[in-house]
Amino acid sequence: MLRSAMKATVIVSLKPTVLDPQGMTIHRSLASLGLTNISDVRQGKIFDVSIKDGASRQEVERLAKEVLTNPVIEEYRIIWE
Amino acid sequence: MKFGVVIFPGSNCEHDCYYVVESVIGQPVEFIWHQDTSVKGFDAVILPGGFAYGDYLRTGALAKFSPVMKAIGDFAKQGGLVFGICNGFQILAEAGLLPGALLRNVGLKYVCKFLHLRTETTDTPYSNILKKNQLLRIPVGHGDGNYFADPETLKRIEDNGQVVFRYATASGEITPEANPNGSLHNIAGIVNEQRNVLGMMPHPDRSSESLLGSADGKLIFESMVNALVRAG
Image 1 (cartoon, each protein chain N blue to C red):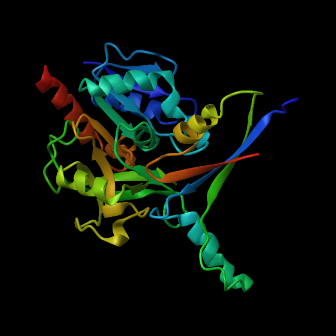
Image 2 (cartoon, one colour; image 1 turned 90 degrees about the vertical axis):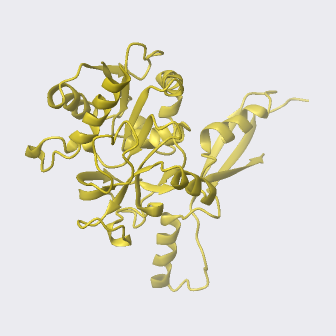
């Protein structure tokens, strides 16, 4: 079977215990739009990653853990396509 | 005695630091390129302010992968003086040479102004000629200076006396109003457990001559000289 290049999405977000000034500011501005049911907004980052055919998923794990995330303040999850 | 000032792509305060060391405190100084793999021959290394690697990803996040950072990590382990100012502090925190992290300022504003720092400990190579509670007038200029650490880490650095400077009012009080960025416990500068690595958001390099509005920053550089002379 022909394998196509693998893709992954890495989502990085601030830990729930870490203050998110950007998310708070976005949330505060919603009142003027009348979006009164949105109780919280947290801002994060998304990285679209392509991996060479047949390569180990471990490299994406390392990328997410060692580069894209600062473990002091952030956490990540990976969605494989 | 030789000082080094590291240049990352995007550093922009390296000449300020170089000038203060060479012309204000009169010590030998050389630039260190971020691709260098050794800091041999240096007694103190300064990581200057700026926007290393454009602050892409997170402030300091990509700078920590520069070859020179491995050498600086080893240098720090051996007790060498490593001083990060502003972006330099962010890089040291990202590299794990200092505890905690610098978040976006509360209020999201880039804050650029003179403010007061209260000296919390004189037991560091960076504050040994200061007096406890001495106030320094030093400017900040940053968008990501909001010091954060988890509660355990925060307790540990407080218990160990690793907080060197706090944002204070002109009369030396530690209040929320004196805090420009939301930093926990008004923290403006900390040392590592070994006390040889200092990171601070305010810029002593921009306040080492009275012509610039304050010469208080010079006291930090002079403390370093004092520490190096004492160490022989």
